[in-house]
Image (cartoon, rainbow, N blue to C red; front, side):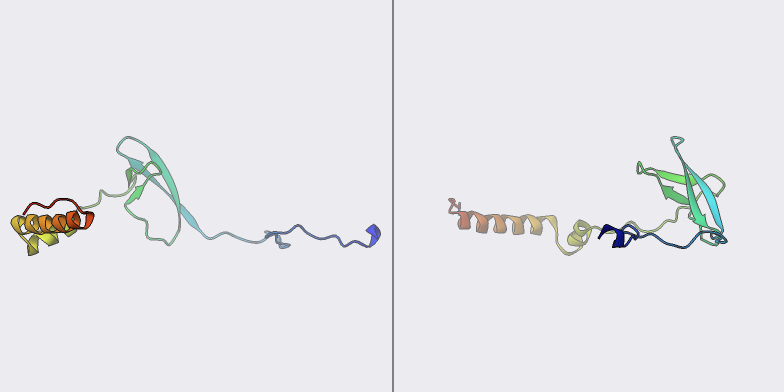
Length: 115
């Protein structure tokens, strides 16, 4: 019976095609450097728009070695939830609302509530 067994390939993604005659897409390597001297080389496609900055693996901002320093625009900072809340309510109103909610919580817990 072993002489009749079929021989095959292993399971998985294996191709029977060869890589002969296959030419990879044109690429470019761009070097970025952070303020503390950490260098990162990133490979992009030749026609890709290359960014002026890149975040390193350690989380630092790195700028292109051969590029220009990016111009920081004077955009408004993003408004937080707290900023929008202060546009609708004053601090006194917020404190009053907080006290009301704490009072409800204490009643629900069965604690003594001062009048």
